[in-house]
Structure formats: structure tokens, C-alpha cells
Image 1 (cartoon, one colour):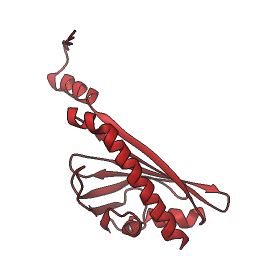
Image 2 (image 1 turned 180 degrees about the vertical axis):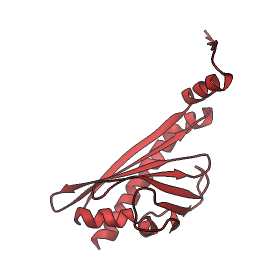
Image 3 (image 1 turned 90 degrees about the vertical axis):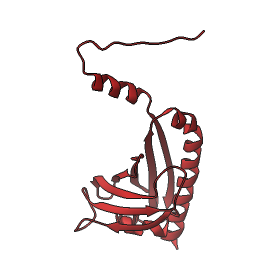
Length: 172
């Protein structure tokens, strides 16, 4: 049986109703991976906080350039250039939207149709640092809904590789 849904928004602007319908069609790729690095929290945090270090361990990052002045922190912006991928544009900007020294960094990217949010959380673990890397990518459209399982698997695999590289770089 085919079922059709219709809704009428009386007294609400057409744009608002359209936005609500669009938001219902959005889907989220949400992946978290973690590793323990045998270095103190301040060293691991400092290395990741300076996004210009990213090409040393993030194998898809070709170039990262700081656009804002001063030390890394909330409001710092970067121009990023990644290897081309099937997921979207290979360049854009990242803004640090949350910055808790030694604990947490959240960056929001603008890469064309995708605006992924990347969160790094740092915790002391024995003689090292437990780093968790969470990436959230909001997508929309039927095609992206169908591709979500494949995208989730790919994002998880790639981020495990990135953290393994980070561990290797910092422990060498």
C-alpha cells in the first residue's frame, strides 16, 4: 500500500514550512574514533591546536594556512586544501568555534555543500593522552540518505588511519 502525507501550514510562511520539510530530509554522518598517544596532553593538544600541522598526519590534507592573527584559539580561521574526493570540494575554510586548552577543540568547516564539524577531545590516560576525534557531516537529499551507510564506513576508516598517523608522528 502506498501512503501519501500532506500537510497544510495555516498561518505560517511558505518558506518556514519548506525549511521544516528540508530539515526532515537531512541526515547526519556521525563518527567518533579514539586512540592513546604516549605523550602528555599539553603536547598532543598543542600539536593539533595548530592546524597548520595537519598535513603531517592527516593524509588528505595537502595544505593548511592560518588566515587570522595571533595564537590558535576560538575564532581562529584557516584555509584548507584537501586531496580531491567524491564527497565534495577539496578546499574551503575552517573556524575554531570552541577552544578549551588541554581539553577540547571544535572546528566548523565550510567545504561547499558540506559543512562538517570536527571535535577533538583530550584526556590524560596513564602516561599519555587519549584523543577522541568526532566528525559530524550533515547531508541532505535522497541520494545522500542512500549513501549514508557507505559514507559512515568510509569516514570511520579514514579517521582511524588519521589517528594512527598522528600517533606515529607524535611518538617518533
